[in-house]
Figure 1 (tube, helix red, strand yellow):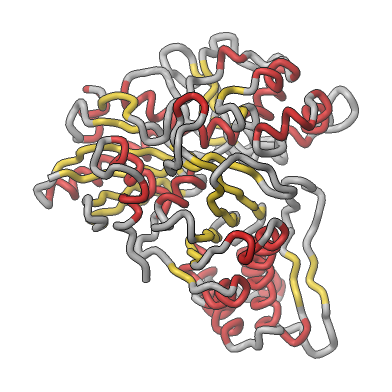
Figure 2: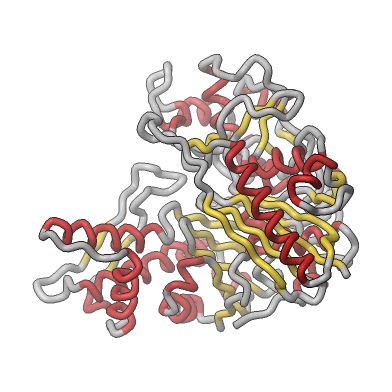
Length: 485
C-alpha cells in the first residue's frame, strides 16, 4: 500500500513523517540540524550542506525502516525547508559555499556607498518593481546574499546555480540540477509574483547573473525518480517519485489547515507568522504576499495556485525563550542553576494563574526588530511598584507574541473583512504552552484548532507529494485528512 513521506529541512531540526492516504501518521523521525558553522564574524549564519545531507539521509533511512516494519512501501517523497537562504553549487551539484541561512545579517553591514548593502539594493530598484515581488528585500534572502557576493566578487567561479537547501537535496535525490517552486523563488526577493517569473528588471538593476537562478516548477510536481545512489543510502526503492519542494511557511499552511478559505493560521516557533489565503495577487502595507500552492485557477506560466498574505514576527517564540534565558542568567549571578525545561514549566504555571490584564503590564515583543525596521526594539511597559512579577511578565510576553501577529491581521481588514471562522494554531511554542491557545482565541474571536500532528511542514510536504502523484486530486481533497485536537 502507498505511503507518502514528507521531509522538512529546518533551521534547528530535520524532520520526516510518513503518512497514509487517509491522513494517518504512521511514523516520524527527527534529528538535530547540527550543521552550524562556528567562528564566523558577528551577524553571520551559515550551515554545512554536506552535514545537512547526512542528517536528511538518516531521517529517510529510519523512516523507510519503520514503514517497512509495517509491510508498507514508500510511494513518493515530498520536500520542504527553511526559506530565503542561499547555496552555490557547481554543474555536478557539488556545494561551493556553505548554506548562508535566512538568519544571516551580512547585508546589514556597511557597503561601499555608505549605507548598508540592503539600503543599496533598495535604492537601485524602483518601488514599483519591488511591489511585484510580494515583499521588500531583507538580509538573509537569496537575492540579498547573491547581491552582497556579486558586489564583492565573492561568487565562486565554478558556480552553475544558486539554490535553496531543500532544492539542492531534491537535485541530489534525483541526480539532476536543482529546480525550485514559486513559493521559494518568491522568498528570494527576485521573483515577479504578479507575472509568475523571475523579475528581469530587479535582476538587471541589481547586476545579478540570472543564469544562476534555477527553473521554476509547480510545488509538489514530480521532478524525477530517486537515484540508484540515494536508493542505496536510504533503502527506499530506486525510481520512487521525488516531488518539487515548497517553502516551509507554505508547507506548514498546507499541513495545518483543512479549509484555506475559512481559516487564518498563526504559527509560533522560533519565529512567528500569521497567514491567510487571498484569491489574487495584491499587496498590503506591512505584509508579504506569497504564493500558496492551493489551486484556485490558472495563473501565468501554467501555475495553479493562489496567494496568501503573511505577517512575520522576527522574534516570535524566541521572545519567551529570551525570558527563560534572562531568568536563568539572573539566577546564575546568585550561584543558582536551573534546567531550561524546568524554568519553562514554572513560567507556564505562573502565566496560567495570572490575570489576562497582567495588572497593567504589557510587552511589545519586537526584540529582534522587524523586516521593515531591523533596528526597532521591544519594550515592557506599565511597570508599577507592585506588578513586575514573573507571572505578569511571562503572560505579558505571551500576549505580546500573539498581539504582534494579530495587529497585522487587523491592519488589513481583520476578521470582518476576511470572514474567517477558524483560527488554526501551530508550532512548538503553541504545543509547549497551552495558554497560547486561549490568548489566540480571545484575540481573534475565533475557535482555535490545533493539528494532531506536530510536524506541520513535513506533513504538508507529504500532502503536496500526494497531490503531485495523484493520491488526491487537489489540496481541497487532501486537506480533509487533517485531524485536529
